[in-house]
Image 1 (cartoon, rainbow, N blue to C red):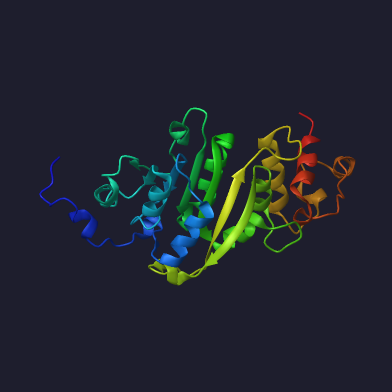
Image 2: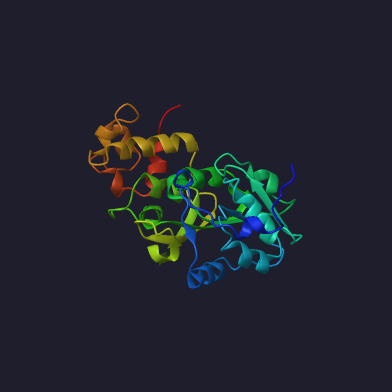
Length: 270
């Protein structure tokens, strides 16, 4: 299909952020520079950007790494990105849903992916677990997320933010909150604060016999987080079995580390 517009016209036309895609476009140069420094892309890195939007991070990432693949769901933004960066030999854009995308196809032989992005709040958690499912194929993830989500990801046992997400990530990766970002760094401005998090996938530093079973135990425990484990895990483990795993059956889910949840899950007879 041909277009009557002159080359580059798409890049100059204003784009209205779409609520259904959760679009809030990053524009603050200071924040952009700080994110790029945190990622520290190097020539030869296999960089992937999710949700490039108007390309605020795209340019600096491409400049530093020399090559960049981006995944953008909004088909109206694809021509803008191609008009601005398509003349660079290392740039590839995929018009696709990041939640359904097969990232394995981007992994080079003997290499790993470095993934970054300003993620829409409405897909951040499922997308994170979709990516963590690729395990060692991903070297690291740097994401802008809602600050509340980052707080939950990095929370320690016993803290108010600690929950199912904290435990699930701890079983799959190391996570570190890097810095906060205020609403003014985006257009339109969101009604919440944001934060940048670094997540490095790795095998758990404790034994998990069955990850799906581990996730079921964690989900059951936190579905009734104010209840004692003996009640919350009824049907999976009784008080005697919990105690045999070295865990107080009167404890609550928010008090247990990921390693302790693993001991509970491993003790379930198959």
